[in-house]
Length: 432
Image 1 (cartoon, rainbow, N blue to C red):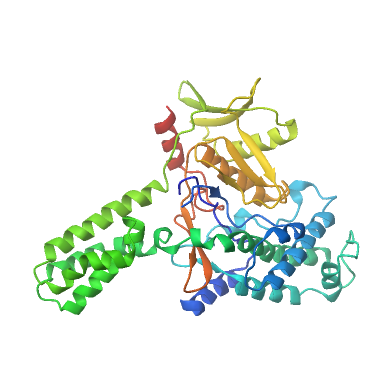
Image 2 (cartoon, rainbow, N blue to C red; image 1 turned 135 degrees about the vertical axis):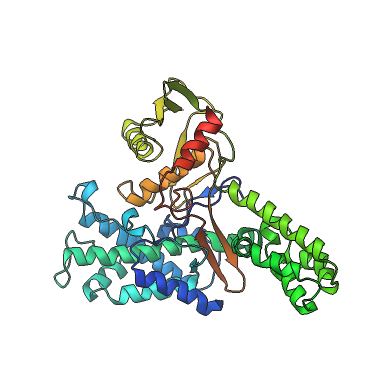
């Protein structure tokens, strides 16, 4: 996804139980079942003061209420834990509990205003009345301890669940007016993945091309045409029009075979590009000492506390012990290649250009959140040149956004993923 797409949506598996994940995918089934910025998905939050900047949308009043209550819930969650060391604070999202529960092509995340409001209302209804009153009435000062009718841990659990809806509402708010830029066709890889998995069966069908019915041949054309938007950047209907004569001829098996092979080949190239370094960063400095390789990137004018935090995140992700280290160093002068991290309120985390030197982070998300940490690590992967290996698109039929990861074990595909041998090999091949 070119300038790198909106980061892995974590629309958020934040504090979701297995049951809630199931209900999301089921809800999607009930409903009916490229720009280059790398945006790290659904983990960003819009503040109530930013609501006025948004355009019109379905259920605008309800979504606005989720934003207002969610912002207050996060503020209260932080206040309740102000005396707790950051490393011991209860998290609204934890990588460990999300492993194995990321959204896949088979079980995608489907979200829209109705789904968000349904989940929010269900969670809010379970809150004790005292907590509901605090969250709804902004004139009430936030208490530093839990009300008498709920324990401290229970309240934090409720507030974390509210935050999940808050994050989703923020994502919806930010993307709804941009939905035309998120067309399903070229972004939805599922038709091509199905084609790839059925390649053998389809070739067996082609061997019988002269004896199968025109209806069966037309079904073949329709199935292959479904993968055209992703594999060859053609609309499905355009491919049907181009190849519909295959269904009329019992002697067109050879052409059908060539078409299938071409779709498999081009689709595979595009799919594998999702996992590769798309554009090298020209500002990196490399060196080797024996078998150990080092990649360094300069920073300028960043305060020590933030620099230390950034170094810690990189050390916990992009270092491969005994083989490769990735480090930041303090440059004496600012250059065009110096790494810049911009903290902007309500902005979706992103990298404006793959292999560039700018990371945009959401200033509304505190650095003590584990999600903020893994988001930065993912975005730094784009600085190194990697693209995203997940997708998100607007489904016009469902009137909803759909998100799924291509490989939940890969950190550039899913936030609960890891930094793998394939990342190490790609870095060595491109930079050494």
